[in-house]
Image (cartoon, rainbow, N blue to C red; front, side, top):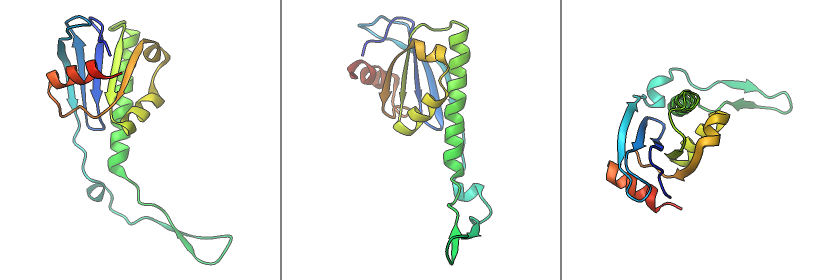
Length: 147
């Protein structure tokens, strides 16, 4: 996938996001870090204090248990929604014309739920990978080699 000059590349997962801008051209990308944000999130066992609730079944005998709330996943989903909000503000401010988003499947799905129409219009590609732990040259190579 070619990265247009001045395109923004968002590399994100549920805890970290990198906003990169291509200072190079489509054939020789040169991604520069514009913003780096990371969130600390405690494990679910450290966030929840109560056991999941139980309820009586109105249909048959017995009780039903509720599933344990995954607070860690809720934090990651909220973080993805924040990333989408940042993309919206930047798109409405005409900060970029071309956008490529790189994220693992769950985060990518959560981002898509929150894309503003202006962000969707400027989206030139999505890559379904977790590259947040990679170096900038590795990210450039992974984006350039993606279909």
